[in-house]
Amino acid sequence: QGFGLGGEWGGAALLAVENAPPGWAARFGMAPQLGAPVGFIAANGLFLLLGLNLTEQQFIAWGWRVPFLASGILVGLGLWVRLKISETPDFARVLEAERPAPVPVAELLRHHLRATLAGTFAVVACFAIFYLSTAFALGYATTALGHDRTSFLIVQLGAILFLALGIVVSGYRSDATSSGRVLMIGCAATVGVGLMFGPLLGSGSLWLAWIALSVALLVMGFVYGPLGAWLPQQFPARVRYTGASVAFNGGGIIGGAVAPIAAQALADRGGADAVGLYLAAAGLVSFAGLWVQRGRAIS
Image (cartoon, rainbow, N blue to C red; front, top):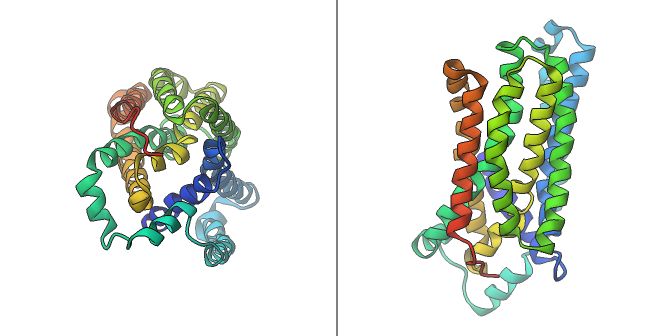
């Protein structure tokens, strides 16, 4: 996952944004972001179908392997795409003028540390929302709250559609205004989502849980969709791929890898309300990263 996503997202975002017509950067940049809701629906939809058609024993014995084996089709498709694409236009112009950086990450940290750290913090909120609304919510709902796994998967699949909606709307709004402004509005909204997330999720009602997840994932669209356009703007073309990738995945480690572990520890001590406060704090962290970089776009 680390090698795959580490090299994947930055290249996809740059390929989309640098080939966008004038005024369409955010709308092209949101295309890689749609991979999150589409992938979630594909993966959990398949798990849901298996859960409905297999016994618990069959699912544990072999059923859970089916989605992983089926993903081999996507691996082949991804390899075919990679063999067909060339360098992005901006980087191709850089190669014509000078030699590429021998160690891009060293140059990035030496000359663009501020942008790297700010970009990393700016990404935290979107990963925190996603993993709290998916991995943590499913585990908490089916253990602490006693919800049926199949029923809660249906709730999550219904909620994830709002993530796709938020990504699309934020892409259009970013081109109409600016990606940084839309991201900051999304981070401010994340704080509000954090305050309602815990009480609604912990209420024991599937309907209220669906509302909590739907609102959270809708807001996630506004802190995730514009990143494809905003992050590359923080770095010159010479180290843009490295800068966008390091910041995006660094924020993923802080906001995504840590979130389910921290949330479970908080839930054990303070219930779902404490998890909501954690989400609100993630929104503040990302807002701070965006504030530091306001008005500093390179392109």
